[in-house]
Image (cartoon, rainbow, N blue to C red; front, side, top):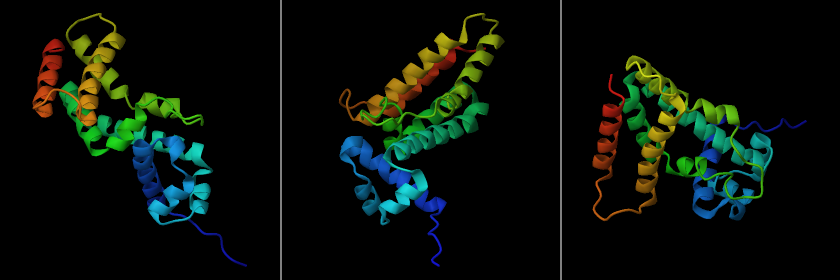
Length: 190
């Protein structure tokens, strides 16, 4: 009797990364499982065995991206708001396909493929904690949520503009980002 094929975590990760790149480039409805399998050098059987199907693969990509992003944020948390901001940009520049998919809504497809809410929410917890700590240290009773939204919107907007390749000619994105982080730090200085 033949033994069932076992697919390893390395293949799983290659499938996630390749799918993210293909979907970011072509769109989820234009990428078939056979295209993904061929790009990775495996079979569609491997995709079905590891993920169950295309909707589950797309959900796994989003969950994996939010976990990785959250890990980078937790690692940067001891360095406060500046550390979180620097880690945000660094992670996005290192993972542009994942970043694009994370923030493109339900991937513009008719398939159910949204991230697991708990995983997505956990990725931003370090920012909530840093803002809460900064407000408390300043003796402020301002609510945390609007400040989180303002900070996140600013860093997300700059990173998204940088990754899109659009914007003003000659922009030094690193300098623009530093300027934003400096202003955020001054706004929440203790």
